[in-house]
Length: 200
Image 1 (cartoon, one colour):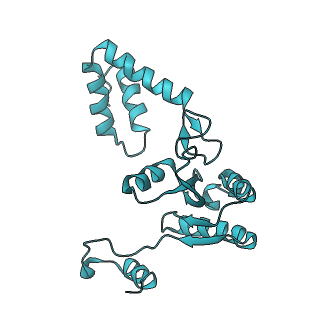
Image 2 (cartoon, helix red, strand yellow):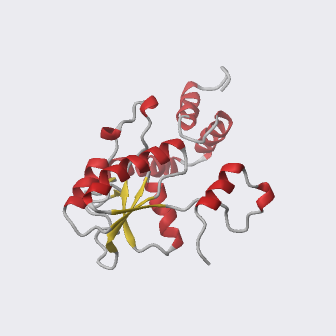
Image 3 (cartoon, one colour):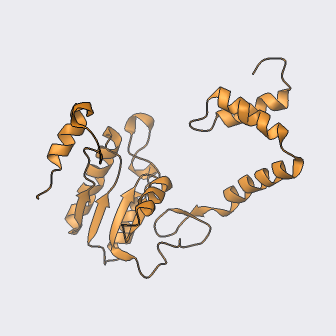
């Protein structure tokens, strides 16, 4: 923001801009919007931020974010805890839950392997996954990491740890989206669609 703006407003915009996906123009709009809010609304907003940071933590079982010791999914007796879907982040759990088709449980890694960025296996929640499986009862682990270099490397690394334990390890199928048009698909997407084809 330009020098003619009040310093607290500049700092507020910079804080918004530090959030992922927020550019400086959007950050400035948000900062100006906060200034147009009444003081009680701003206080409610600030209280919500502090409350979320203080009261939300990782589930002791699946590592998803929750305000309880054990999250609602892990404590739901109707869920099939013999199948664990391994995801990168809590946002991925939300995406799967929107489908209303998956009835197993989850394990959140909170990141993907990326040695170049200093993200090694000890920085992820892999140890917690292994200790869950060691307790018994798990028949399948679905690796649901993104189809990127880091996602594939993480899936292969964890699969390598689980195979000797006699656990079935599967990977999400990747390929053409529903309603997609072949001529607009890139080579990698077409290759994945061929590789993950199903019987009819």
